[in-house]
Length: 81
Image (cartoon, rainbow, N blue to C red):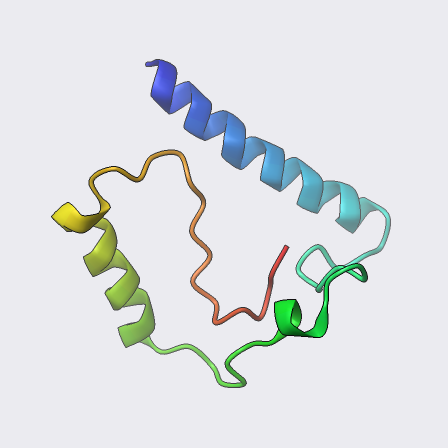
């Protein structure tokens, strides 16, 4: 139960940050002003179902067996926070 509570806490913290920005009238998914141009570069295209499927395929594979408690954004870098 400890790990699941950690995961909920981590996701909750991120959602709270996003809500705080929404409350201030800001876009929580917009690049932050202190990020360098290379940090805000993205793929310049819309994602496809295959992009999401590739991430899911990785996460259910043995290669991802040591990954825990991480929020994975599959968005081509369009919403880096």
